[in-house]
Amino acid sequence: MDPEEDYSPGDYLRPYERMQNVYDKLLLLNFEQEFLKMTRVRAFHRLYFMCPTNPGEQFFNFVSLSTWLLRKCGKEIEMAQESDDPNVLIANILEQSRSMGGVMDFNPSRVKSGFGPDVVEVLDFLTDNALVSSEHQWLPPVVLKEQKEDDEIGEVDQEVILEKIEDEIEAYYSSEGEDTDLVWVQGSSAGSGQGPETSQPDSGKILQSDIVDTEQWRLEVERVLPQLKITIQQDSQDWRQRQEQMRTYTEAVSDVVEQLDGPLDKMITDARSVIEKVKTRENFINTEFETLLMELSVTQDNVATMKDRHRELSNKATTKNRTLSQLNDELDTIRRQLNDRGSIMADGAPVSATKKSIAALKKELGDMEVEIAVVEHCLMKSLLQEQIAQREKPA
Image (tube, rainbow, N blue to C red; front, side, top):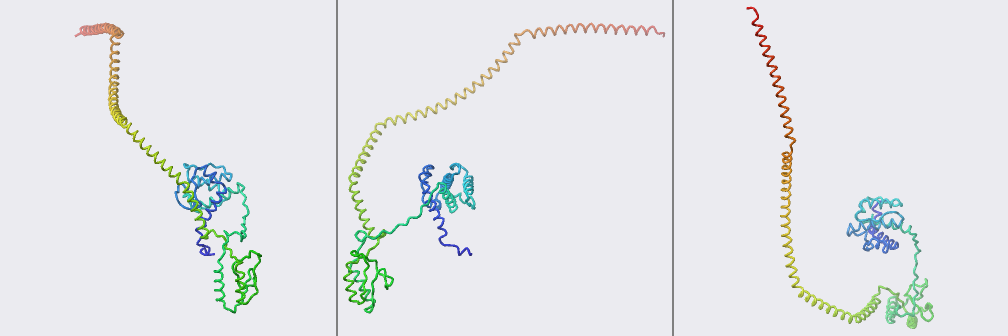
């Protein structure tokens, strides 16, 4: 089949109708008393999720409502928070919907805006399952029976002026001619035409006549005409009824205005008097406290100046303390050096060690002198022996 043949000009309105059905089902689930009060979300209209307003607000309301519906369906899921990841929220909602048999074959990003046909589709599926889980029972439609006309109530029925009926009948006769045979039978299929609905208050029977002569028929009509009454169904759109309602409402409003006019005038007078007293008291207080306010202003300026001065002195004191700390460190270093030198000078151990070293050196020098003398003696002896040996050789 050609897709163009299936297209209907009203297809774009079907999501709107579906959204209205979703809203009706939400009312059946008592979402105004449960969901709106629990989440403190502002009430929205029937086409809220089909009309773009605030994307962030609509998306949060959508995920919150979907989570509430899933909990209605018996799913263990926490309510959505504004700090939650939108992608995770959408994935959880679609996954839970598919687990209940929902066919969510669209891209999850299409519900990120918080409105549109896909959003309505998800809500429609969840509301149906929530109604099933809550064991909601649909009652058969109630057909209202039409109320029977009561000829005795003059406020509902309106009688047609007899002169107007006579003029219409004469016009009808003049258009049909003198030779036309007329039979007026109401409710009979054998008649050639049907007239307005009539009733006879006395007998309640349908008026019938076999008269075919025009003059006799006219006389018969004139005789029966006072007993005829044309009943007009009550219509809420009738301007006469609207006019009567307007007159009633106007009189009621006028009475209420007359009753409230005096108290309202008194309230206005009292309010003006109170306002004048408040203004007078305010001026008096301003006058009384003007001097104190000026003193307070001067004191605040002085406090600000003192704070600045205190800040400067605090900075200087901090600098001086830092310099003092450095000088104390240097003084401690010099004191340690002096103590070390004093301890060295007062201690005799180094002197005794030096004396012992000198004595040892002297002993070593004596031993060296003896060894040197021995060596010299040996050397002199060897030289003398060599000279003697040379002399004793023959020439």
